[in-house]
Image 1 (tube, one colour):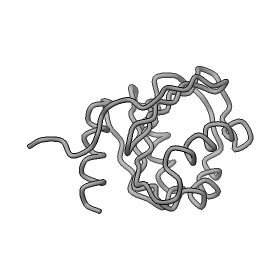
Image 2 (image 1 turned 135 degrees about the horizontal axis):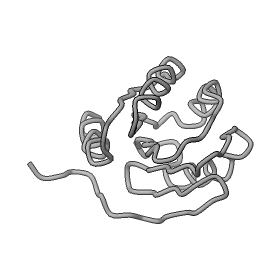
Image 3 (image 1 turned 45 degrees about the horizontal axis):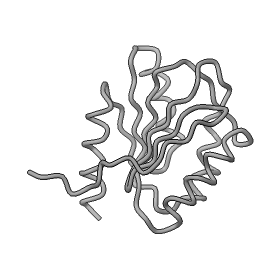
Image 4 (image 1 turned 90 degrees about the vertical axis):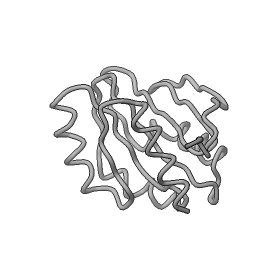
Length: 133
């Protein structure tokens, strides 16, 4: 089966809170170690995301949790309203503690959420979600 989504990197942005990789129908977020992610310090990333996907291009947000950081999961309620075209939220974890955090975070999201052990698996899931549309 050939891939129907474009897996070519459009652009990488290195911001204060981390690195963000934008593709045609998904983005990969790698937040820096020790950052306390908030709606306020995420605004630059949110503006970039809106620039790439607008309100109509379907996309999946992949958080690649290579580092330890904190965030307020209730911020998901506000960001979900900004992106009606968000088709899924993937969490790539590398240890048991992050799996527990990701499981808890699922209750704050009103979209398809999946936890993965590898970035490749998460990217393959994008294909399932985008093709379903």
